[in-house]
Image (cartoon, rainbow, N blue to C red; front, top):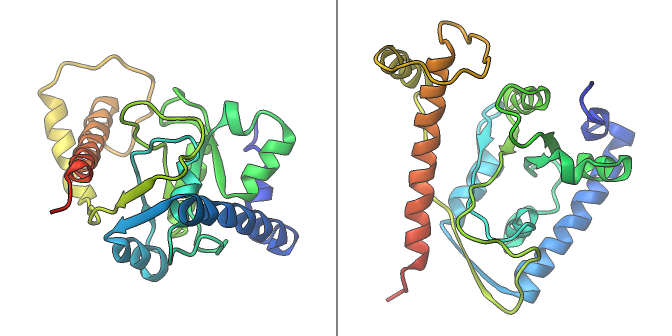
Length: 234
């Protein structure tokens, strides 16, 4: 089965007008929720704005976040100063295929909103994951599935003080991490295998060591940010 309506996600689809229309409409909604229905403050916003607007050409950006509402993306991008309505600067996000792509109308809408369908529980080797890699190879901004702490209400909050904390960029030395994963995998009993194909010199055990290492580093940073967000200001 081919990639679902990938053509609708291209920037030149109908001159880019459908994408700009959807991004602007959703961005306006996000700003209304973040700035009018709620009071939103952002710590370290300049770091994120610089990465979104001014990173060198061809350099990709991956962001992950904890979220408390099913609409936190795109609502959390509605804070003051963020280019929420700029279709070129907006993120690509992995969206659940069984929710956002269950019929042609939804598929077209979410494609215009720069969403990539993903099968939850389908593992890292699935067709649309390759599309996400293509976006990163082009230097785009991609946001994978968010980490979740606790329950999440189905709709955004209102009349609340929303606090967004942006962490410092995490830089991964991929060659070094791959070498560590290769060394670690030699001392481990084989994991339950899922049929992952070899990736260069890395077999499935080494790949899973690399995946776990990166995931745990990200989750550790998010946990520290979550704890920081709970601390009252003096």
